[in-house]
Every structure is written in C-alpha cells, then in structure tokens.
Figure (cartoon, rainbow, N blue to C red):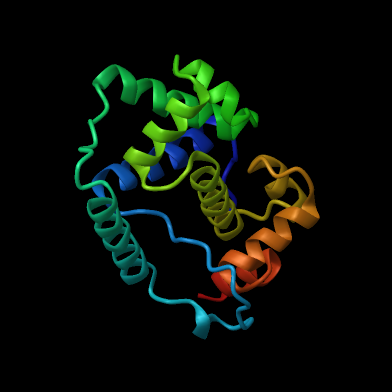
Length: 180
C-alpha cells in the first residue's frame, strides 16, 4: 500500500498530467461553489474532463477565430515540461518559470494558456491537487507531509483548497479511497 514518495515519483505524476493535457484529456476543473461532503456530488471524472476540454476548445475557437494557435516546437515543449515539473516540485514562481523558458512573463502566460487551456497558476494548482489525491490514495503519508510534498504553503490552505476541489477533506478522501 505504501509507496515511496521521491522526486522521481512526483516527476512521473506531473509528466503524466502533461501528457493527458497534450492528448486533450485534462485535469478536472475546480468548482468553487459549495459542495456536499459525500461522493454523490462528484461527477464521473472522465465525463467531466471530456466536457470541460470540449467547452474550452469551443471557447478558444470562438474567441480566437482570427488568431491561430502556433503549436510549441520540440524545444519549447521540452522547456515547458522541464519548467513545469521543476516549478511544481521546487515551488518556483510563474516569473521564474517564464525565465527558465526564455520568455517574458506575458509571453509565457499567453503561450502556456494557448497550449494547456488554462493560465499557468491555475493549471499548476490543479496538478498539485491531483498529485495530492494520488499520494493520499496510495500512501499513509501524514496530511501535513502531503501538503508540503505538493508545494502548498501551509496545511490550512491545502485542506481548504482540496475540499473546495473534491468536495471532501483530504482525510475523508483517503478514507473513501481505502474503502474502495
């Protein structure tokens, strides 16, 4: 049941999320509205993801009809991937990520949003939450350790953000996952 959480495990998880986005299968979007604490409020992940990605693609087509999105070159894609992985693991700011990709801050944000359909900060938050859910389901790491591993500033912020996204606290999530 207990996995070793090291840099390689985290990198693999983040790279997996990047691959899903590049294939058109995105992370779940946060719902900032109040949610009940049972799992009945959580929609089927695949269905939610597909509808979310479809709606973003429709919005992009409608909003940018005259501005085609230029795909990333292989070198740009490698820089983005490296910056994102290191940014999440090491807690880098968006400005530092832009610098590591050799972009200005505004260009980095625009290119990132074009490629991943969300601003970098939002995408990274969702990635951190997904990583936290994996660690909670697969290990017995204390909640405070999971919070720290996933790059959250403090436990209160982690718990509140996790609850807002999943509708349940990290402890409840772990309990539900172990029951299944």
